[in-house]
Amino acid sequence: MDIMKTPPKTTPEKSKDSPSPSGSKRKVHTPSSDSDSEKPSAKQDTPDRKRTPSGSPPEKKRKTENEEDHAHNKQKKEKQEEERLKMQVLVSNFSEEQLNRYEMYRRAAFPKAAVRRLMQSITGCTVPQNVVIAMSGIAKVFVGEVVEEALDVMEHWNETGPLQPKHLRESVRKLKSRDLITSTKSKKVLFR
Image (tube, rainbow, N blue to C red; front, side, top):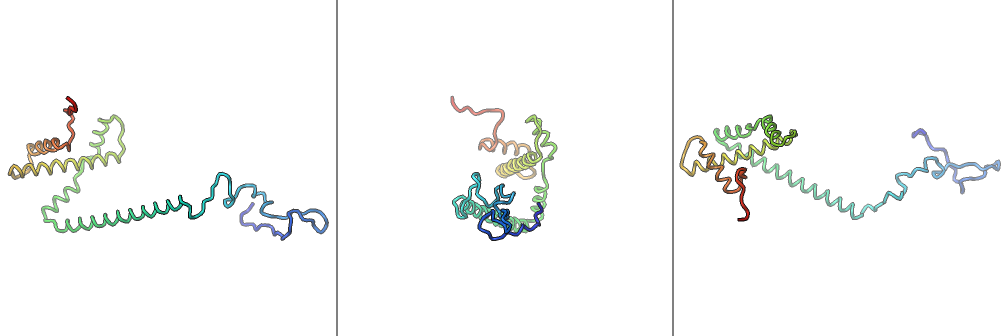
């Protein structure tokens, strides 16, 4: 049946089967007599489809959840924008040396192939690309913490110049003593 066809004209008669002028019964087209009416329409209630009023509690709950999500996303975007502006002000006030160091920090990254190889050798299975990227970022943060602690050690020892291995070793020792780095060789004895 073509959708664009107009339905047959109906006559406002009192019954479905009305006698024609000739005395025979004639079938009058009504929505209930249509062959498509045997299928439940979207507007009809079916046993497995429940109608809920527009102000029902689940719908209100969804609306409040959506409003909360929208408010949370708005706050998150505002916070990100505020942080971006703060960072922009900070970078604009960097000296030439600080700007060069910041650029080097931004460009520095562990080679993804090496990180993937290391992770695959440890786990024994293939590692997805997003996990490799995450591990590279974590490694970069870890190295930053070790270097920052090494610079503090060097300052505490009243030394100048580039970082040396003794500064890095001492920073790792301090981080281990604060339980910021887990030791793989020795295990702590909980009970004696």
